[in-house]
Amino acid sequence: MPRNKMSSARTILNAVASDRVITKFTPPFHPDGTPYSKVNFHPKVKAACSENRTGRVGLKITKAVLVGDVSVGKTSLVNRFCHDVFDREYKATIGVDFEVEKFSVLSVPITLQIWDTAGQERFKCIAASYYRGAQIVIVAFDLTDEESLHHTNKWMEEACASADEPVKFLVGTKKDLLSPSSYADIESRALKYADKLGAEFWATSSKSGINVTEFFFRAMCLSFDDTLLKELEVTNVSAKQIGTIKVQKSNSDLYEKKKSGSSKCCA
Image (cartoon, rainbow, N blue to C red):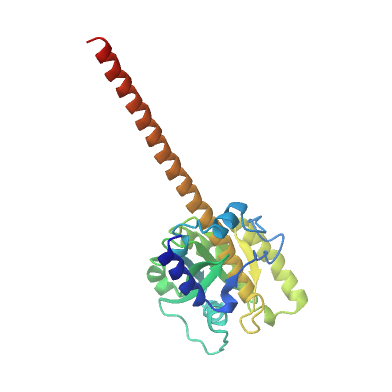
């Protein structure tokens, strides 16, 4: 890596808070609640990071969109993770809000944008325009309100229509309000929904902070691994194409030389 790029990377890494450094792959919340079998970074990803062959990945922004019914706790989830605060008096989001978090994943600087969208019907047309290009789609529902779980299919379909082959999550909020038996009951149904949606299930509490950081770390691990693998694939294809062009040119030159030599012989 050129000296100026290495210096720039170190500067960015120094700006990353110590609690946003990811060195290990975060496991799923529930072993039966995920379509993603990854439990570690791909060997190619690890090698590329250790050898500084991450291309433009460190310059890209990972976009996450958070959708779901009104008052399910979307803003509380974001504020707990980004600011480590919880406020019962949050006002309903108008349109879209967003937060920016800087991470270091395997020593590669990554920026995460979290787009917190309004759940009211009248803001849907505004929020939908922000789904485009999302690498992470998070559909939130209230664990104490089963009706909000029934609406998750609609939210996932709308968000993924404009997303970029996203990593998908179904996140239950307000876990602290449920007794163990009540939670077990809603979890069993949530797992079925997650399976139908092709999403990974998480249960969180913004009030207590349970599973909030772990969830966002898991989302970053899965997204980073996918993004870098795609980057490496594009780089390898480009290298092969350049190699093919060189071989073709070399064969063409050889043909021209032979042709030139033949004409001299026959002169």
